Length: 215
Image 1 (spheres, one colour):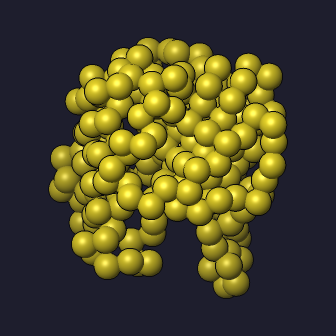
Image 2: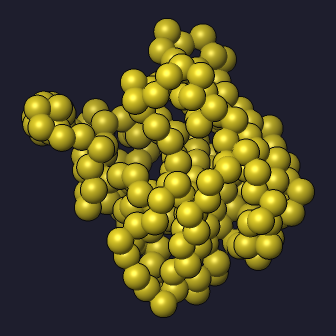
């Protein structure tokens, strides 16, 4: 199996990358992101991609891949409103359009978020943007597609938080574990479901926790 991983420098993408590289069913992994990760493996090919509105140079890789994990994203407070929508929706739309041309048989796994609003009626920008991205995937011609909506993500090998924010989130998670999922378990479920090919498409936080305890 040949696997694409987008956003491996992030907390979830990084965990997905480590786990697919360890999976014996995977022959090759192509990691595509804005920057390279500090990791080497005979299975791994890393590509630092600059223009996420144009994937022409990557179409050959797309055509030969079986499974794609899309974990590329940014927190809404890290960039302007315009850039947040561009990164969350426009980059994603350009990728899906490319895959619809070159490989509709690929299995696609989208790292979304609890609170995503396909109706785009959320009070929060991230909810509407994530919801629109989900709609793009759902309505696409891609044969198999899965959407994962975790709540709080307890960091694994890498964290997106630091200092007081990390301490606060982990304190809340320790008291109310059902509000989130461990990054290691999230990646495990994404890989398991992506390879299992079940009919279920949407995985909420409670699903992620339940499945992680069974695999």
